[in-house]
Structures are given as structure tokens and as C-alpha cells.
Amino acid sequence: MKTKEPIWIGLGVLLTLCYLLPLFWLGEQAHVRIHDNLDSNVVWYKNLVESDSIYAGLQDKVPNLVGGVVSRNAFVSEWTGIIWLYQWFSPFTAYAVSQALTRIFAFIGLYLLLRDHLKLQLPRAVIMFVAVLFAWTPVWPSGMLSTLGMPLLLWAYLNLWQKQRIGLSLLTLALVPFYSSFVLGIVFFLALLALFGLYREWRQKSFHALFWTAFVGQILLYLAIEYRLVYSMLWEGEATSRDQFDLGHNGIFRTIRLFFKQFVLGHTHAEAAQTPVLLVLILSVLVVAVHKKDPTVRWLKQGLVLLAGLSLWYAVWFYTGWQPLKERIHVMQTFNFARFHFIEPMLWYILFALALDWLWRRAWRRLVIGVLFLQAVVLIIWNPEIVYRDQPSFSEFYAVQQFSRIQSYIGKPVNTYQVVSLGLHPAIAQYNRFRTLDGYVNFYPLTYKQKFRTIIEGELNKSSKLEHYFDDWGNRVYIYAAELGKHYDYTKANQKSVRQLDIDIVQLKRMGGDYLLSAVPIRNASSIGLKLEKTFLDNQSAWIIYLYRVAPEGG
Image (cartoon, rainbow, N blue to C red; front, side, top):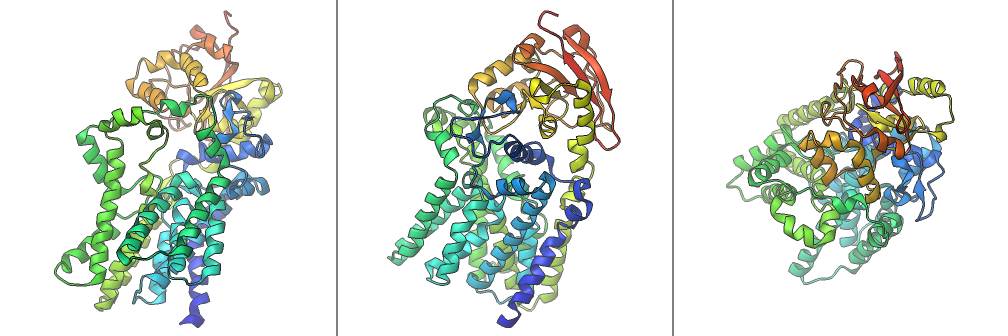
């Protein structure tokens, strides 16, 4: 079997890459996730490269977005590998290469974990295919190995616990931090790993020095790589938008509903696509084997309880009952402790393999093959090209040709004026090198939030939903219109007029706003101090852009 190992791994890598065929075949015409992806991360990395801000100091700001007031520390450090890709390649190529690397190592990690540590009787072909399906899961694409790299980390830590493959395991633990995020997944994985490790040490009356030395060393490495985030949380004196986070307003019934939603469907950043196949299979095995004394059945029960517990923790974190404690303990307000859900995809596919192993040992092998096929179909349906087929493609979203024409029409160097957007994401203007007063970032000065709020106060007063969204979170520093709601996708095929836009044009001009790029017509533009300059259409763009000039103060 060992002689065929490279064949199984090679075949698994090829099957993993098949999931990305639309991305490589269609190029910039491919459809990819917009939310927390094209509207943010892709533009952040591109902006850092083009503004020569990658190696900026701890006190420096990043120009061209959100009025140029955002700290360099709001973004990943120069030691994070995804930044290197955006230095070496065009944004789309960097994105595609990142997806390929992430999913290849997702496959390798789960394959090694299942092969070496779960004592499965499944043939290598089935183990390989389970790992491929894990690599196909529709998790957040900008997370790098933060979620999909967890099986590889767990494999390495279990090796050290058993004092096996020490060199390769230490190398793995040293390299993964350069292509993952500590706070967006890994810290929660390490916290859970530490709890289980301490429990096992207590039960066995032992101490695995190599394991714990590597564990502490990896944490220190993560903190060193993400030194900018550490500095911003511990030593940056300026109050930021994080200091106004207030996200826990769910009552008991909404909390219960959120629990079931999380357990059955998962979180948008860490979707395992466990429904219907994985969840039904695991529950079915537990029902059939309820009275059987089998270690696999016990692991399935414990795993499902753990997943339910993680879902419950996620739901309860947003329960309003936490508020008094969050108000007293500042870090509970500024840091999202609910994110243990990043661990769930790995757990679902480990349980999936265990359930298949139970079936295989009882000679239900056709059923195993059928279940694998069904889950493959589910994941193919979840492929971004299918899920986002009704949204703009990469090139249609960023509309480079159209925005180049807008720049030419304005006729001034882009660093001499600033714009805001309505009905479309500010990231589009940022991608095309416009300087924007608005944007989407992790945090920014609280004073800027207060000034920007003056611009949109009239619209916030019309919608309690928008008011809560901006005041209690506010990372999307957008020009909101109550008539449009929390939607930023008013394409050519989805047009709607804003009849009465109530924004403070004087404050917009005072903050340096010169133009408003709107995806929809504004009926009362002239009465509030906006002059329609020109309407821009482009066959290769998803948008109709109405270019409004902000009238001079008092003009």
C-alpha cells in the first residue's frame, strides 16, 4: 500500500484542483464570493502593494481608503504569505494561486490525519476522496489556511504527542503560521487543543514536553508574525471603531434559532456543507448503532456533542445577557470570542470518515460509495461558479475599463480628489486607485466614525436597522440610503431610484469629498448640492455609474 501512496496523494491533488477549474478556465470572468472577499480583502492587499504600505511603520496610515486615516496595523503584517502573492502577481492571479495552495494543503492535511491517526479500515481510495471533499468545502476564501489548514496542524501535533515524524511535524508547525490568521480561526483551534491536551495529561498522569514546547513556540511565532495586531490591541492609544462594538442584542428565542441555524447550516465563513448528507449519515449511524458497544459510535456521539456545544457557544455569545459583563471587560467587546465555529468543518469531515468506516466494516460498501457521490454533488452545487452565477464576475465587479473612463472624464490626478459610493461597494473605486472617504476595514479611528456619521445621520434616522448596523459595528463606512437598505449590488439588471437622499453635503465636502459615484439615480440630487456630471455605461461592467460632483460649500 505504501508504494501506491504517492499515487493516491497525486490523484487527490488533481481532484482537489478540479474544484477550481472554473476559476482557471474562465479567468477574470469567473464568479467568486463578493461578501468579505472582493469587497474587502482583495482590495486591501492590492492597496497595500500599490501604495508602498506593506512595510510601513507602526504609526503609519494607509492612503486611498477611508480618508487615509486607517492604521497600517488594521491589516495583515508583511510576514503573512498572501501579501507576497499580491506582490508577485496580478490580483486575480494571486487570488487563484491562494485558492489552489489553500485547498491542496487542506486535502493533504486531512488525508494524513485520517491515514495516520484515526485507525480507519477504509481503503486509501475512500480516505483520499473524503479528504478531497473536505478541500472542496465552501469556506471563506480569504482565510488562507486558518480553517482548511487545521487538519494539517492537528496531524503535526498528534505526531509530536506520539513522538513520531518529529522533524516534519515541527517544520509544518513553523510554516503554517505564515499562511493563516491567528485571530480568525487558529487561536480557537489552539485553545480547544490545549483543553483536550490538558485533559489527557490529567487522565494519563503524564506530561508530553515536546508537544507543549511546540505548542508554546507556535503561539509565540504567531504573535511575532501578527505583531501589528498585537500592537494595535495593546499599545495603540487612539480610540478606534472597535471600542464601540455592541453586537449582543439577541433575546432567548433568537439565540435558540441561531443555535439551530449554526448547527444545521454552519457559519458563512466556515461552511462544511454538512446538510443534508453528512448530518443525516452521522445521525443514521447513531440511530442504527445506538445499542452497540463500538469505539467509533462513541466518538461519533462525542463529536456531535462537541459540534452542538460549539454551535451553542456561538449563539449564546450574541445573547443580550452578556452585555453587563461585556461593558465591564473591554476585550469581550473588542474581540469576538464566538469564532470557535472555524473548527467545525474539520470536525464534520472527521465524523464523516468515522461514519463511513463504520459502514465499511459492516460491508455496506455500495452505500459508502453512494454517500461519497452524493456529498460530491452537494459540494459541486456549492461551487462559487454556481452559487454566485447571478452576481457580477470578478472583472464585471471591478469594472476597470469603466472606471478608467471616469478618471479620464474627471481629468485630474487621482490623488487630488476623493470620492464616495452609493449603491455599490467603495472597494470598486479603491481597486481602480480612487481615493475614497468610505470603505470597509477592520477598524479605524473613532473620531473619523463620528465625523462620517454626520454625513449619513439623516439616512440613519430613517432606519433603525441601518442605525444599529453603523453605530454598533460600523466597519462598513458607507454612504447609506434607507431606500436602498443594506444592499450594495444595484447592477444594470437591478436598478432602483433614490427619491429622497438625506445626506449632509456640507460635511461631505468639509471632509474632502469631491465626487459621489452612484449605481442608481438620485432624484433630489440638485436640491441637496449634487450635480450630475455624466452617466457611464460599459458592456464589460455590471454597473451604470452616475457621476455626481459635490457642490462647493454654500454653493
